[in-house]
Amino acid sequence: MHPVLSIRDLRKAYGDKIAVDRVSFEVSRGEIVGLLGPNGAGKTTTISMILGVLQPDSGLIQLEGMDLATCRAQALERTNFAAVYAPLPGNLTVRQNLRVFGMLYGVKGLSERIKALIRQFDLEKFRNVKCGVLSSGEQTKVALAKAMLNQPHLLLLDEPTASLDPVAAREIRARIREFAVSGDGGVLWTTHNMVEVQDVCDRVLFLSHGRIMLEGNPKTLPDEHGLPTLEELFIAVAREPLTQE
Amino acid sequence: MNSTRTYFRPVIAVMLRYFYLLRGTPARWIPVFAWVAIDIVLWGFITKYLNSVAAPRLNFVPTLLGAVLLFDFFTRVMHGLAGVFLEDVWSRSFLNLFASPITIPQYLLGLVATSTVMSLISLAVMLVLATAVFGLSFFVYGLALAPFLLILFLFGVSLGICTSAMVLRLGPPAEWLVWPVPAIISPFAGVFYPISILPHWMQFVGKLLPVSYVFEGLRTIISGGSVPAASLILGGGLAVAYVFLACWFFKRVFRHAVRTGILARYSAESLS
Image: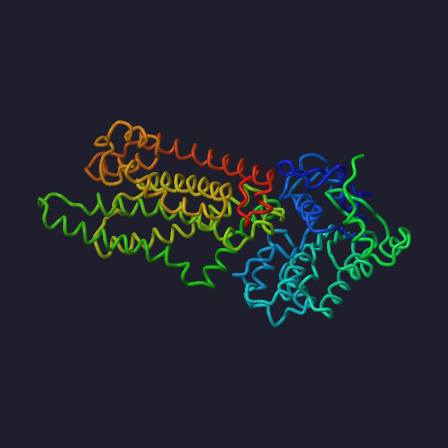
């Protein structure tokens, strides 16, 4: 059986600046993989390429064995995402947004699915409110509800809990954990919250200067490198200068 | 049947999004009703005045008011299509939209279908107003008008897609390239006069515009001639060719936007 996401030798440069440099990794079913790294490390560029909105210079992206470059629509049907920098149109209500995106993703039994998600993400009182007037935390919940619409096999989350209060963030983490454990899906998650990473992720990839510098279990990695916490390890990797091979 | 329904679901989603916006914001109805109505009222009175001072046999209503009505229809198709596209620019929807399984042909079909509905409403408003208030008798030409409207529609679609591609390529501020396009075209298209009175270089440009065949043809049938089939076929052929060219152009610009990162960083207005 194919992994939900398989990436091989992915590379992207903007002019002279190499944003992602020969990155390879996989995400398996039921697995939550944390993509960590300092600002500008190449995390968002990697996610944009997986979403098909940015073309890699070279390399291969496969979603459940389907090549994204040649089977774009079929591959994207099984994917969804939520990111702080991609809010849903603020001039549509929560329900309208979920209906439009549900149709774009070809969701069957859409009305029931929307009702279930509105209930699940505690959005009942906002269902007819325009997304643009919601607080950032509420907008994040709507974005997550949209990301779950098509019950994706690959869920991409770019700092999904960044604007949530601790209680809401814990609830969201629990839901995403539940999504990974109960379904066929895998999750690729970027965040700067190391506590969250240790709580949720099965595996982490440290990205710096566009390369994967480190990979492993977030609970055991700090010990393996003689550091007390994952945050210390993050700082050490982020400060490491890029060495020539 | 099932696969047809599946194919058209994203197309309907693009339409539905716009109809939600229309329902939520009455101001979006202004271009559909108000501007076209103002144009018809203004030109209706101008033609009435001209009829009162000109020789008794001359009737400016079909030539001037009819031309304004048809040109406004073309403008509504073009602006309508680009306007639906610009809603995605204004609401910064590109990432969410193009990370979904929608294909470019489906997206363009959605823009065209939405613009078709809106421009038909505008056309109905103009026809009712021009007929009821100013006595424009377009209905006497019946189905003979269909090819004229079709050419205007197709050319409006091609320019709407083309200008949307330009906004995608050049960034949000390029929206100002969209609005003046019909005004730029109008002197070459011979909306109110035969293009034979234009300088040679302008005539050459005019002959490349499908709409110029429409207005030449309109004047011919109003003056009692028969429908100029050959020139309408030429105009129709040009319009169809421009639609294909515009779709090709949009697809090419979209690929460039995906390759260079313009799409992923659209609101940053980077033009790499």
